[in-house]
Length: 108
Image (tube, rainbow, N blue to C red; front, side, top):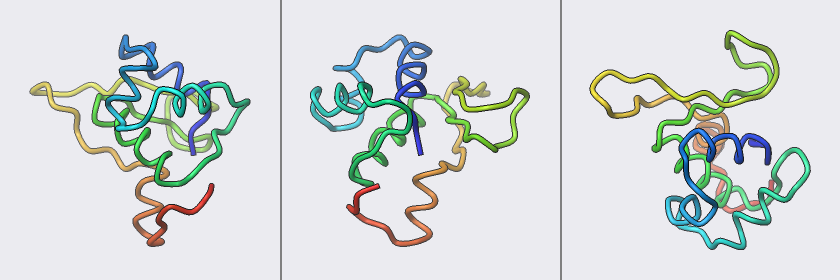
């Protein structure tokens, strides 16, 4: 899953606003605003969450889960370092989980 804090931090790292994230994810601006206004974990339709996470990952963001290996502890985001400019494919906590279970547009 993703938290509203992670969404805002990811946008800040990329230097984009909510409208640009909405465009990258193929969602409406009010949807992004609603997601970021939530407290803690973003809840919503799985397909919508997948679109946001996928857009952030394509842009070069690696979302770090609470217990995922990283240098620090807790939740966060980090900008992926790449060779050759293109972001490398990093497994997504939500996206890969949804693919493995065959989940579609169910609520989170």
